Length: 263
Image (cartoon, rainbow, N blue to C red; front, top):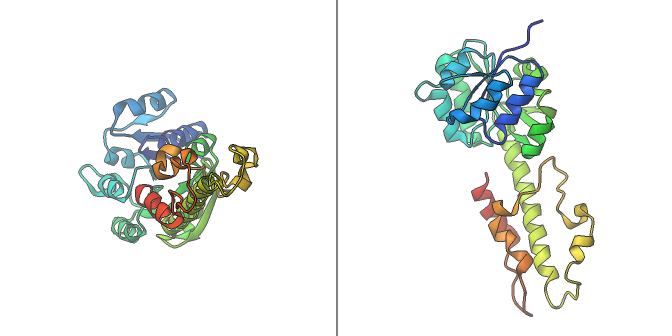
């Protein structure tokens, strides 16, 4: 049986390895990115490069969107030379963005009027998981459409979990981020507290504790956030607290800061 034709729009740290894994699995793959150089290596591996989102959609039965946010999804789908104008009736758009759940159903409804299905399928696992084909996908949308796409989703993930109707995938990704960011912020505060003179702990004692105890392995299928992504927390390793002084990172406020900068 012929392999489904797939497309990938957005070839950054996540989209590029996703496209590469689809190619290795034997799916005819068309790609597009605003940066022509991002398509070069994938072309060498057998992908077709397209000139626009619409051109990718014309060649794809399942179209993956791996772009930064819901605004970018809207532009890719419905902007000039957008994918919605090129996609055939019966095709599927898989939105892998960590997007705003308020936009999921409007996107799905607009596509449905053209006979195009929509799944919101945000992911965890980071670039390492994407390269290894070990992402966790949280998929919202029609279960029949999900089952149709599952053979493809399995080639880029360790698990593709159907979580409910359209929008529920985006909701669950935000819940996941809420928990993981809060745990990370609490870990940072713990690092600051261990430096308090009243703690009496040796300088590097946390480095001797296994990572799960230290809170650095979240156990949620996601890589711990890098220090460059959480600048407020990155400062606490150098903190020195005087008696009565408050730690520099508040768990709740620190989490909200992280959440605003990394949806």
